[in-house]
Image (tube, helix red, strand yellow):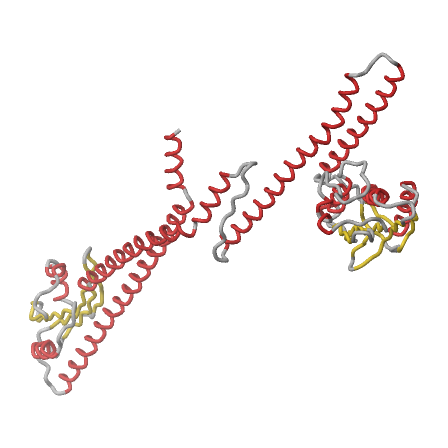
Length: 475
């Protein structure tokens, strides 16, 4: 068991959300850094090439200007031209100038040539014998030399060759050093940022760990824990949603527990009555007939209870309603005709809505009859019961109003719960306290609501408020 827990712990470390965030961060930073370093190196390489070309063009231009000046003033000695130009120009870093006279090396500035060029005797011999201008590039593993060679041939004198070149070896070394520094700095930043993100990620994801721990600790007898909401971000919203879910679970568990206790209590009474009478059953036919009547009545009550419980269970199913188009005015008149059979009261229609509604006629009739039966049980013969319907704000309202004993304010919310009864009533209801719960289930299945207005001694009004347009999920 301990090994399993250790494995699960290490698995959370390597495959947890925080680890995956770090891994994705490192991957993205590595890719972006690689692309950045490559792009910067390419830009610097291009600028280095342009600078090398500009140096060659500039030196060649200055040499030609000097050469034209020499020819204009009649000073046309090749060695004097080379000496004058080499003495006037100080080469920049990586720049070299060579001169050949009559196929032999004459002078160079600076005197030390690049190693890759000094070892290439064939190239130097070829340069010394050039008769046409030549522009080219010599590429080696560690260097890139660009050159411009100009033959100098004046009035039959000894031919000369002037060569200006630029080596990028030193610049490439600096570029490599800069690249290495960039990579090292980026790695250091990446390591530090990863550590910071790991620590910050732990704090940010702490509510999720608490949420997981709370979810693991929840059971049917322990749903009272709640998470503290901090901030107003997505995790805070998730925490509030989780707390709201726990509230609903707690209410559901409480309702389920009360439902089981109440149902067990309600079923225990008729079972006890039936068992007692059957155990005392004698041989007298008259006594057997009375006992059979009592047992049958108790079984009928149990059957009504089971049917009501099944109805409440079916109310959660999507096929609970059988929708049809209902003429509200005609439906109101039908309700009154059926309600009159429930008791000798003064029955009357207060108002009628002349419209159509999409609803389950049988379920609505059942709900209104439950309200009418409830009104009969809590009124006297001389009291009045009014039924009606009206349209307001794109909703249809059905109501049952009586002039009976009324309901206390503290009871008005509780009576819609299962097995709830009015405690201040002077009359004992014959039902199990499921009637109003069934009414609310039917109305909520129609996406409507039940409202109650009542005062003690002034009667009560139960209103079923339904939308005229039914939503698509009920079709």
